[in-house]
Picture (spheres, rainbow, N blue to C red):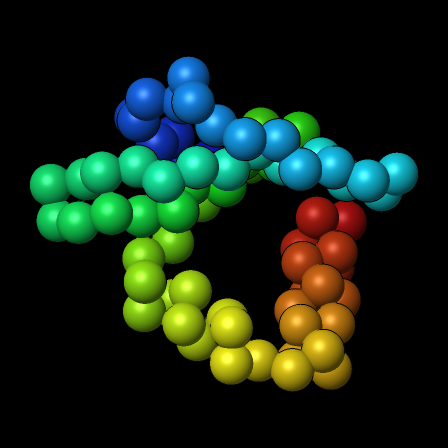
Length: 75
């Protein structure tokens, strides 16, 4: 299921290394600010402060498990 997020993406920052590239920026919605992240493959997500705080509390091992699941979903 493809999600399209209608936001102004003209002021996004770019972050990349040899494995991945994303664009990100803060967007203002009717119900508050969100972090917009767009992948080079066209996927995008809006994260609210609650989700960002939860992600920040995760350890390296937890984040690694998320990557495994994301790769399985893509395949």
